[in-house]
Image 1 (cartoon, rainbow, N blue to C red):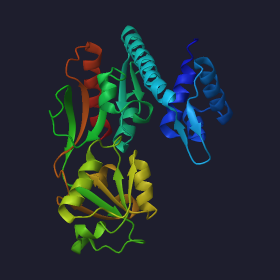
Image 2 (spheres, one colour):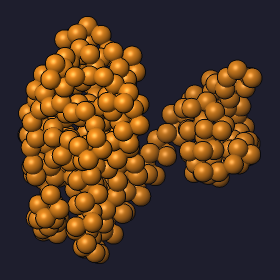
Image 3 (cartoon, helix red, strand yellow):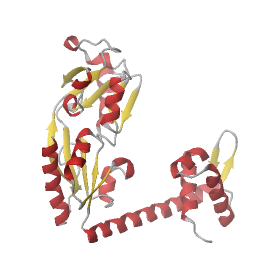
Length: 302
């Protein structure tokens, strides 16, 4: 049988999401192209891969067996490409850095200006710890609520630490009184919070704190993967912004005329760190030199 990687990739995505339109969108191809790839794979294997109905799309027994094999092939192909990319970067002397989509990350990218540093963003890579582990990136610069040294396989170079939690809202839509503010009040509102790609670890920590401390969760919670979008949503009155650290400064919230409260009464009051992360066994002189360049650029941009 002639192997066809594109067909296998389409098969895996379609089996996971159960939608031809979503699969087409994920692969940036047309729906007829998705159908053609599945038909080709069924022809090559001689197997019927899906049960189709108006209500659902489910893999057949044979489809489920092939799915495990297809996942391994697609995953190994991706890892091979990542390893090859890492090898080529070493030859060319390029260090790949993942920058988070915060205001600090945007300023840092503008301040570096080094051709030997290639910048990527979380949306284009695996989750940041995995991306480091498999050498998809060489360094990660992100905010996090992970205590220093908690991850045994990583080293952390702290750029800054911020205490407390910032709450912000548009006073046109919310009538909270900053002088008599109670945390429980915000839990009746939609919460605007950082997602896992923006501040890893914060959202599950916040949800656990809500459940354990107040016995409830907000009626709605919107996670953002970049600070600019979260700020815009807060200004538009879509909810109450809850971000760790000194968000009123780093997200320029006061410039937008928002109501703002800083508090230590929320989870992780002193655990927000903006840091560089690298593999613990990293010895490349170029990677280590890039850390110094990033730290200098961050302090210039701050």
